[in-house]
Image 1 (tube, rainbow, N blue to C red):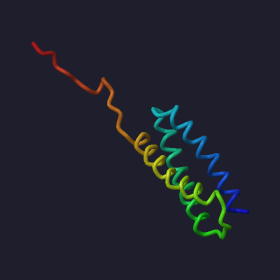
Image 2 (cartoon, one colour; image 1 turned 180 degrees about the vertical axis):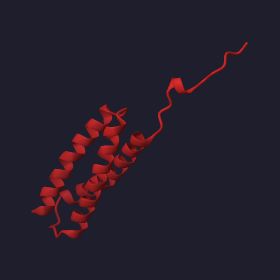
Image 3 (cartoon, rainbow, N blue to C red; image 1 turned 30 degrees about the vertical axis):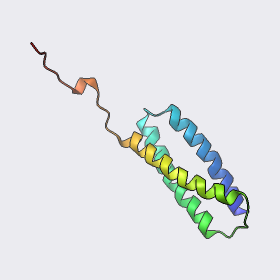
Image 4 (cartoon, helix red, strand yellow; image 1 turned 90 degrees about the horizontal axis):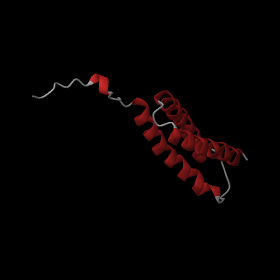
Length: 97
């Protein structure tokens, strides 16, 4: 029971997270926040997958796949959240004559 409930909670979070992340790539605060929430979701996901007894079912493969894909999503979010954005005002060019 817990296995199925956590799977569906994480699946809904995964869909919302990916959609929001895609449309807010330039929002570094949101990317950082979602990346850290994803770390919690990954820990919970692996803890539930390996720590809670569950019957062999069709969602087992989906659960573990979603956990691993979530690691990649978190890495992308950390990249977009913590990258340094160069603006044109920080670059000083000298005119060439």
